[in-house]
Each structure stands twice: as C-alpha cells, then as structure tokens.
Length: 184
Image (cartoon, rainbow, N blue to C red):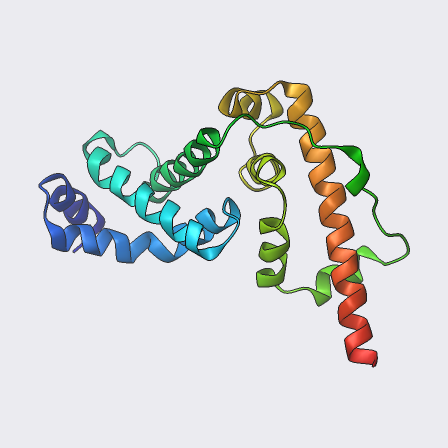
C-alpha cells in the first residue's frame, strides 16, 4: 500500500491500513515520545495514545505538509497533554544547577552515545524536559512554548537555561565517570 491508500484505509477504519500506518511511523514516533517521557513505559503509552488520536482524526489530514510531520505533532501534543494533567509547571529551586568545569565540549560529544544522551534528557524534571525538547528539538519559540504549557515566557526561558545547565552537569559527570571506568 502506498501512503494515500493507507490514509484512505485508515479513514475507512481498515485495521490492515492502521497497522501499516503504525508500522511505517511507530519507531520514529517512539523516539519522539521518548524525548518527552521519563522512561520507556511512559513513552510507549504516549505513542499508543497518540496513534489512537491519529486514527480518530486521520480524516482531518488534508495533505498539506507531510503525514509524518502531522503525526509527530499529534505525538508531541499527546505528551504535552499528559504533563499538563500532572499540574502546572513551575521553576524549581536553584541549588541543583551548578555545572562542572574543565572538560572540552567536543570530547564529550564524541564520547557519549545517543541513547545515553536521551537517558540524560529523560532524567530532567518534567518541566525542564518539556521546555528543553520543545525549544531545542522542535524549534518552538519561548512565546509558543509559554502558550502551549500555560506558563510565562520568562518561565520558559528560565526553565530552558536551567535544563541546559543540568544537562551540562550530567553530561560532564557522565563523561567523568565513564573516563574513570576506562582508565581504571
């Protein structure tokens, strides 16, 4: 089946077409939901909830832009909805935001795997993870993020700055621990 046939089949409620659509995009969309989730189990929940919304709303896809982009937006919005239900996002206290010094950026980037980096992002608090991902990965402005998360632009900027600081600290700490294990 080509993409148009898959979409038509999904609109008609054809389970084979739905399975084909899921198979076509699920692994990439799982990666997207993983960025916004604290662990694999919650990422899977977000993925499945998102695809249910895709199937329910596929008739609303007008072919403007890519189908993948449309699905990605639904997955991200599903993740955002889950975090909004958990309560408002607040700026956290300052004490856990000191970064390590003295390790070169290029050395860290070359020595850390994508899976390890995703794990470090998942360790961020929900507030920081959401703002970081929306800004750094999705390219939203602070104004757009503020509207999506019902926070002020200043809170968005503050959360991003703190998320970056925490990630820098975690990456440097990860690098330090890894290099100690290698060097004995």
